[in-house]
Image (cartoon, rainbow, N blue to C red; front, side):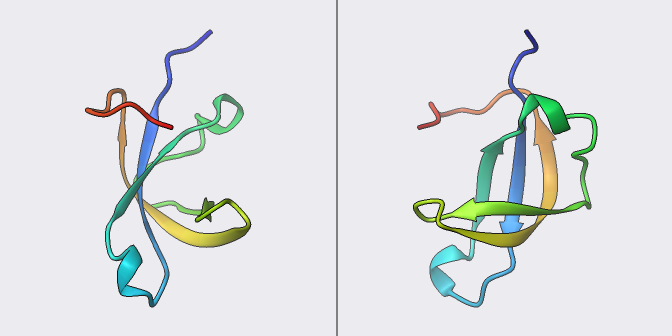
Length: 67
């Protein structure tokens, strides 16, 4: 089992409530494909809608406990 990696992503949304960086755990099956500059589809809110986002950083550790 591989250690979790995380993608820091900005989403393409006009709402000012989402004008920040979101952190997502990268699923193991796509970890080799996620890299800085790639466009991705991510769930936002309660996961009922997908938004396009841009990976701005990939990290091994985060300084908070994910939900």
